Image (cartoon, rainbow, N blue to C red):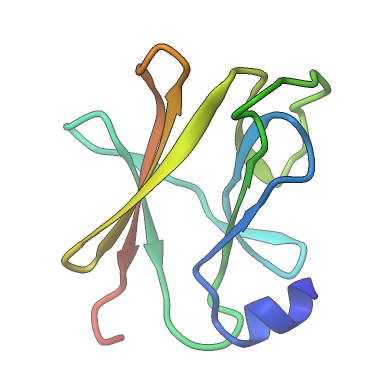
Length: 119
């Protein structure tokens, strides 16, 4: 399934397999093609390309009702936490904002996927 999603140019894939929150770097195949950079507003930013195999961000968002522990040291992952919470997605112009908000309403992770010029 993953090769097909990347071949079709998906920027973001959401899954809920484990009871945790995890977010990958920008990945193509089994390679990290970009890591997020910090912005002055506190968000992280990833420039996403267009077209086949330009990179995909994978988010595991399975901790809305319970957490399950586990290791968060996979080299493709940028963030991982065993915290109750939910993911909020918003589109603003050429950005897709991905926020992980914990059970107390606190922002735990914030990344913007920004479409590259010319897409």
